[in-house]
Image (cartoon, rainbow, N blue to C red; front, side, top):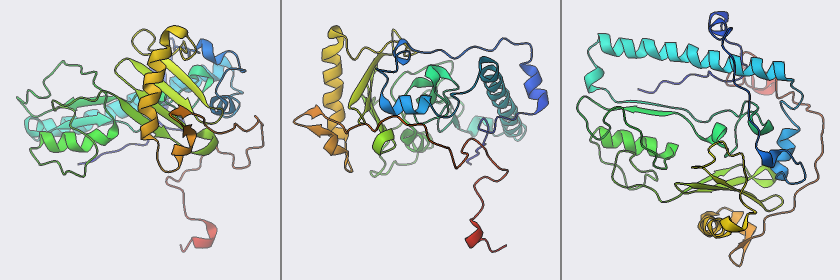
Length: 298
C-alpha cells in the first residue's frame, strides 16, 4: 500500500486548531551561513534564487511561515496515527513493514533560500523511518543508521524485507543489507540552475556549473553548512578527491562541464530581476493543475 499526502506544502494554510498548537511556542529562526553573507562570492544560481521567492519577507512573515509549516507537519502526523491505529485494530502490525519518507524538504528561509531543489540539508535531507515485521532484527528498534542512502533505495529495501528477489535492473540498494555506499551522487536541474553533489560519509561537495563554482562542507563538524571550506588550503585534497569522483558521474551532456579531469563549467548569466508573469507564488485549488482551456472537455 502506498499513501501520500500533499502537506506540508504550499499553500501553507493549516487548520486553525493545528496553528494554535504552536501559538505559544517560540519558533526557531532560519540560520544563514557565513558564505551567504557576501553576494560577490555566492554561487550565481544560489544568488538568483535569493533575489526571487521569499526575498521580500520580513522577520514576522518568515516566523509565521515556519509556524504554519510545523502545524501542517503535526496535522499529517495525526493522520498517520489513524492509519497506524487501524493496522493495530486489525491485528496487522506484527506482519506489516512501515516506511515513512518524503520527496524533499524545504529551506524555509535558511541561507536566505526557500522551497526545494537544493543540496543543502534542509532541502535534500528527508525523513526516513523504517519499522520491520515483528522480530526482524535487520531493522531492529531504537536504532540509527547513518549510511548514505537515496530514494532509489526504497524499492529494494521493501523487496528485501518482504523476501522478494531484487531485480538486477534496480539501481538502488537495500538499506538493511550489508552493502554500504562509499559516496553518493546527486543531480538537480539543468542549465543555469543546474547543481550536482558528491557526498562521502563526512564531506559534501556541491557543484554549480554556471560560473564553475564549488562549495565544500564538513557535515560532521558543521551540520548546518555554515562554513564553506572549498577555498581553504587544508581541505584542498578532500575537494580534489570529491571532484575526481564527481566527474565520472556526469552524463547526458554534462560531460562538457569537465576538460582534462578538471571542472570548467559554463558562463553564468548576469543577475537580473524580471517580472514574475506566472505569479508562481500563488496557487489555486486544483492539484495537479487542471487541463488548459484548449484541451478542456468538461
